[in-house]
Image 1 (cartoon, rainbow over the protein chains, first blue to last red):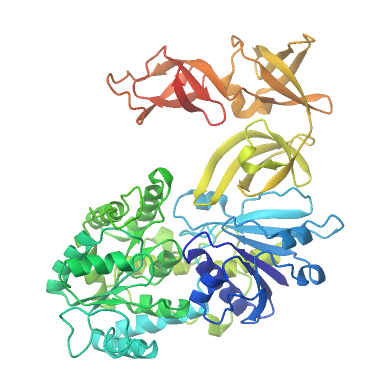
Image 2: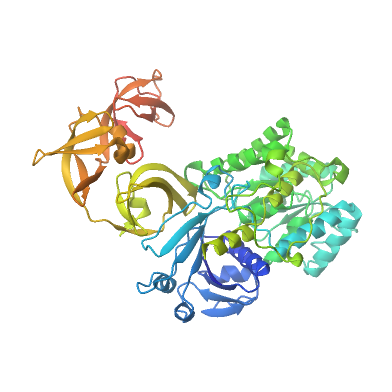
Amino acid sequence: MTVDILCKVVDNFGDIGAVYRLAKALSALDPSLKLRLSVDNLAAFKALEPAVDADAEAQALHGWELLRWGADWPGFRSDPPRLALECFACGRPEPLEEALFAPDRQDVRHIVNIEYLSAEGYADELHLMPSATRSPRVKKHIFMPGFTPATGGLIIDPDFSRAMAVWDQAKAAGREALARAREALTGRLGLGPGLGSGRATGALGPRDEPAGLASRFWLPIFSYERDYGPFVAQAARFAAGEPLAVLAAAGRSQACLVDAWERAGRPFPLVALPFLKQEDWDQILCASDAALVRGEESLARAALAGLPFLWHAYLQEGGHHQVKVAALCDRLAPYFKSAEAAALGACFRALNEREADGPAAGGGEDIGAFLKIARREAFRTPAEQVSPPAAQASPAAVGRSGAASIQASPAAEPAIPAAGRGGYAAFGRALRDNGDLALRLLTFLRALV
Amino acid sequence: MLMTSDIRVGTVFRAGGDVVVVQRMLGIKGGRNGQVKKMRVKNIVTGQTSELGLDMGEKFEEEHLDYHKMKLSYIDGETWIFMDQESFEQYELTKEDLGDNAGYMTPDDDFEVEVAFFNEKPVSVTLPTAIVRTITYCEPGIKGDTSGKSFKPATLDSGIEVSVPLFCEIGTKIKIDTRDGSFIERA
């Protein structure tokens, strides 16, 4: 079965990140699938997967065909598209469009529009809803990622599953074991012993200790441009009671964050991370104690991993991003006591209160409550596990796609130990119980053809 | 070709092999460049209704129909009778055929609508984009609030409820956009 996966990079790396992850997950579920990816920005793809040749019109990657968007690929004629995944309503490249809508074709073709992730209720409504095209022989459906069993769920690819399992075990084994595992990770990533020293690109604060930073409270920041002054000040107060290391991810937030940190007198160690390939970023995220994440792809990773997180939503016209933030907070709320849920909601809202992104944007947030909850969750023992609300956590609850009829290979889905570190961890477990988006999608595609 | 963004209540187009008329807009969902227009449509050949979610990037063939300018003459239960302004012939459409558009019209209106014909049968109505209606009920207005940024529900003389700025009162004539029922300005 050939599946065309289509991706246009709107900006940043979220679109291509999700598409790359989806391709890996589908391949792992069914190695016989022939995947053909059309991507408009191969340079962005290369940032996540260095094996990509950003200049090639067509290339082989992980057993897939990777095409530059619009490439006149002979394969569109020898193996005409039958199933196309239009990721995030990206449209379709002209050569594929011609082959898909060729008037002489008598077979039925299918397009599945995989929409953006949202916690809003409409994700349930739209999941698997029929759509339409101009041709009676090209059928179209909408497939919604989401946070509930009535949606397609989130992508749980094997690499990420393994990362979650490994770091859940390390965390359950205690802080010393976690520090040793982190040392190994940073060594492997070339970040040097004691994260941030040695060959790392980042600057270090005055509180670096001989034991390195691996035993500190890790807080990666992957976000947008803003005034990080208040954030740094509150993180500094937190650092007075709990040794903290901030990991500033490469990209839009790094310069603003480092600037605020410099202005505050380097109150805690900070490491400016180089741009990491997707699998390495997954490892860093899963190895951390809490995170500030942006967009949708990193949000999904943090949420699945049960990591305490704050979400900096993609800015939308008219402040609509706050609707999405509120919807996510509503999904999180049942996993916390009401006072904590309210405090977290206020953190999320304040962080996202802005009309533009830029070095002077926002800055009115109070993340103290979040850091307090994050610290408690990070140091909670498995015995202190919080049970998720029954209605949202039932593994039996599946979406309209029905029960998964395709079995993942045993190696593809290692068991996730239920370390159980509080509300975020319970939320993550519920999301994992919702099932893997790739598996649901593959089941749906198989039913179509 | 018709883009998804051009489609509104009353639009007749080919969705796959079916000729459908949009009866009701059920909202635009999504964000960034990924927006889905959810709608209830009726197959004008079979009469079957269904829900569709169309993303903004899709193009459709517009069904070529005959359009006639008419005025709503009177309403008889669930049947709406329109009069052709040139031939003075009368044509019937059900309230279901009109979908959301039914809520914008009364027989007292002076504005003309375009009635679309498919196989010589009336199938839908296209309203003027902006029409004037009178508020028959709303909570009292807040004097001094002329910002137009805060809204309250208001019932119109045609029976539907829309959102209006706080300064509006019962009896206020307002101009509304018939594509989505949004308030444009005080008339």
